[in-house]
Length: 224
Image (cartoon, rainbow, N blue to C red; front, side, top):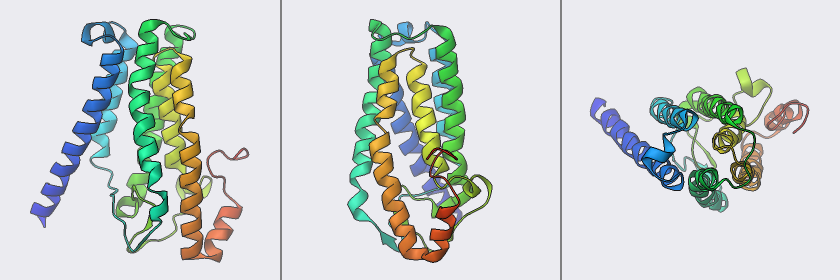
């Protein structure tokens, strides 16, 4: 059992190292190289926060299992997030270097770093709360139960709210509106993802999920 867990952790570590490394490499390339990128303290802090979130993600659980039942028609969302993510890694850094649609200085940059840290933590918290029941796919997992406590007592999709906040923070850390636009590009696939998840959960839990949905917000209480 320990060998299986160790192997699983090594695979996760390799996947995280590859994805985070590629993401940061694209950002540094867009920013004009290592020296130019790290010449700004906020951008250097952005790298530290990104690495810390990557390490934390190794220990919160989650999986990519199709489980007992999956909505395979929603898999296109994964590719949409991948493309947006690659653009989000490179374009804001490039726009920062080229002074395209510049915002308002270092205060914006540090606000972005703070949003990345807070949004990243919010993204990971539900994964830790759900453990193996949290899948990167829209799927019902073995032993799947509704979680309606903590953040879930107010928000049905806190992890997706964290994703949007962290994406916005990343964009703002480069002090350019380009980063904001790329972050907003996540909204259409996120809405499609939430629609698919809620359909699947309604089919699995019926009236219990309808009652839960009736008194909670999707992302922001009082707004949406």
